Length: 155
Image 1 (tube, rainbow, N blue to C red):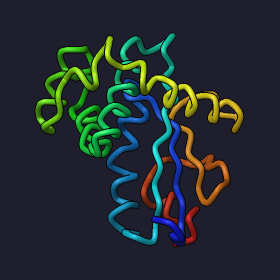
Image 2 (image 1 turned 180 degrees about the vertical axis):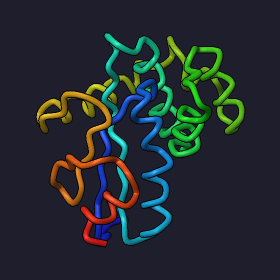
Image 3 (image 1 turned 45 degrees about the horizontal axis):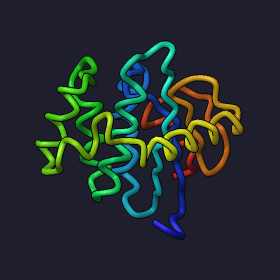
Image 4 (image 1 turned 60 degrees about the horizontal axis):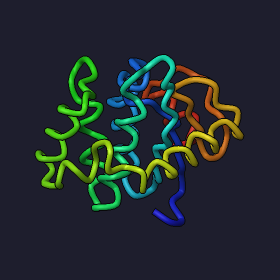
């Protein structure tokens, strides 16, 4: 929300186990603060370590163009282990009611620039790994728990 009291930005990778572990903690913060918090997820796919991270980020941005970023985001992070093959992503698109061709390769050139812009923004901000969090504009260096995030936010 514009004018929100608090901000939390995550640079993340859908295949990163640490990002996956952060999801429920960030969700607790979002539920606690509601409209007082603006949360932004920025793509930082570590493609050399995670072969499916880039296609997952592109799928999320393809879903965003259809107003379905957060449902796709939730599905990409669902489960204990990542399931991010093209078949998985097509299935997620079907679950949220969007045409799979809109979020899977090769029909994705139109959103790859958005993912690259997020990645480059992270590099300029000093991001080297995932998840990297920024709390109210400042890099967060503590444990990624709801308690520590709320404390850092000053909530």
